[in-house]
Length: 141
Image 1 (cartoon, rainbow, N blue to C red):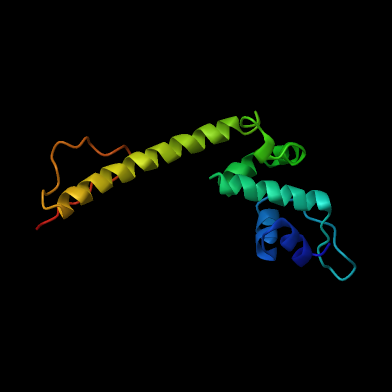
Image 2: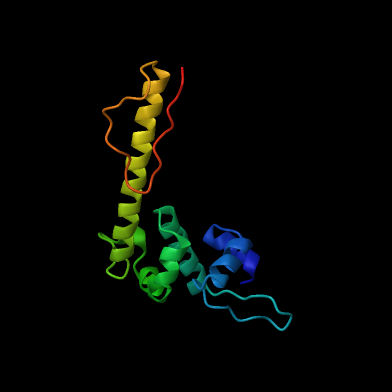
């Protein structure tokens, strides 16, 4: 099927398919004599897996590092897996750690903002911001 048909079947856009190909998540598909890409049902299934993993919070870079293992997930899609596949468990663990750090940073900023909005000023008893973040500026009332 041509790129537009493949994109529609996978629930994405032709531009996304080109991006996945450029990032190494899809092998360059065969082309017609006129130069148009031709995708198989297996490639459409792979794109669906890529989209599912992106929806779970993994990044294109996370997937690129494990692109050679994506075909395993086409055979056992993420929705039917009971636990993260071994090939992706370190990527999932890294992603969870990054999300936890971001949640801690945002919680710290929210507490400061809520205190300032309530007229209490920025509380002094809050723990220092998580590493890698910048403390909220002092707000003048």
